[in-house]
Image (cartoon, rainbow, N blue to C red; front, top):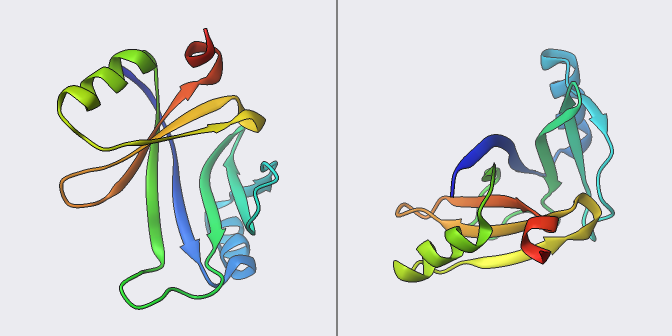
Length: 127
């Protein structure tokens, strides 16, 4: 399963509007298209690529939860090979299909518990 690109970082916030403004003012990122998820958020673009996904933490985090980076995402190919590797190593995963962006997201956690998702083209998975 070769990774093909860094995709995005997902950040949880209780200050969505301020975060959009800050990333625009300081880093020059522009808000752009985002699928119609059932929760508030914004995708911030560097050129044509949404590199930061902001997600509104509403309600604010409970004890033990945190704001900040929620996950890091990569693009990859060979979905079947990746799933086989995870299963061979008994690594739990959860797959989510997002038709609006044509991806299957495979959610995993590293040994320290950091959330990663590896994104595969829906056409590859459906083939």
